[in-house]
Amino acid sequence: MSFIEQLGFFSLSAMSAWGFLMAFFFNIFVYCIDENKRKTTLLLSSFIMMLSYLGGDYFFNWITYTATTFLDWALYDLATLTFLVVSFYFVKRTTPSFIYLIVGLIINTILFLSVYLDVEVYKNTTHWILWDVYSLGVNIVDFTMIIALIVDRDFLFLNKLKNFVFASAKTHKLA
Image 1: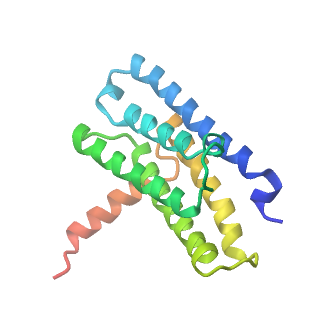
Image 2: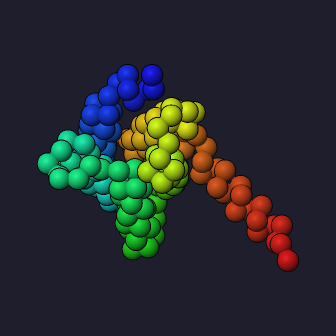
C-alpha cells in the first residue's frame, strides 16, 4: 500500500494548499513589519504559490466534469514557474526561499510527467517503485517549499550550492 493510499489524496492535497495559504498569511505579516522584505519577491512568491496550490487542489476540482490528471498538475507547476520567473524579472531581488520554490517545482514537474507517462501513455497499472517515489517525493517537496516560505532561510544550503556552482563555472571556463 502506497503512502498516498494510506493517508488519502484529499487530506494531503488540502494540507499542502492550507500550508501555502498559511505561508502567504505569515508573509503578509512579515511584509508589514520588515522593511527589507518589501523589496523582495517573498510576498509575491507566497501569493503565486498559494494561488497555484489552491487552484490545483482536489477540493476545488471536485466540481469539474473531467478528472484531473498528472499532466494537469505538471502544467500547473510550469505555469507557476513561469509566474515566479516573471516576478523575479520585475522585482530583481529574491530571498533564500526563491530557489527552494524553483527547484521544488522542477522536481514536482518531473515527477508528475514521469507518472503521467507511466500511467496514461504506457498504461501501466502495476504498482512499482516510481509510484512510491512520486508519493513521497511530491509531498516532501511541497512541505519543504512551505517551510522555506515561512522560515526564509537556506536550511538545505541550496543557495550556497548555487553560488559555488556559479563561482566554479566562472573560474573554469569551458572553451
